[in-house]
Picture 1 (cartoon, helix red, strand yellow):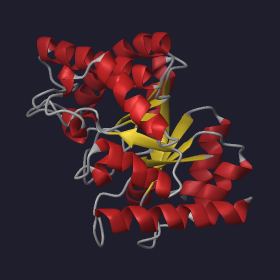
Picture 2 (spheres, rainbow, N blue to C red):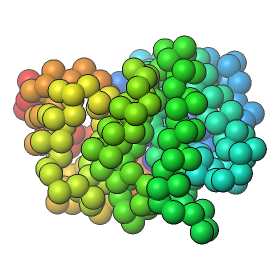
Picture 3 (cartoon, one colour):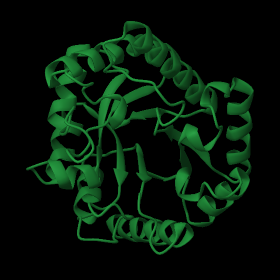
Length: 276
């Protein structure tokens, strides 16, 4: 298992310094949020991707993954009934797939609750159908690029469109592409699931649906900064022979961004060391 730090935690720092800190904390990778890399991520090029990849490599890191895909540019939506707007959103996500591949990333995580929420007057079923059609359109592009595109279940406080791993897995099955998978975020799972995260991990790794893990707490802080279990999910990952990425993704940076990153990385690394 490999440990990655979500770079928005350190977005106040230049990218080279983000890499230095992540490496010093014992991480092997960075999970990039495109909105931290450019005011308008549509401007990101293959040359930019190679520059970020090479900067990370200079610190012994790789770009593990991308997430927070639709924070910028503003106004995009997969659930929209406007076909032209949905096409623009899908085209932008295809660009992010290409950017991820050029960075050397293996995974994209699609959370972005606002861009999947039902539009005014739209039913939940119609919103899900629209979002699913967008993801289905992306699957062949992800497969051709050699990356895995993960549908992220989110808490009900964020969205009512896909809240559980089982719901995401059902979408994955309907799309029917090996490039389309799901993942688990410990904070969201602690808020939305009725089954413990370690059991979900065991079940959905065995079924082949689960391809990525983000660790954090239901209180939105880092792993170990609240009461959300971390050791049990990591033990389940090890027992299943998981070889993928574990990304540290806090939202509330307590006591400050660097302190949160350091505590989180130390907590996860300490647990992993006891499992070896």
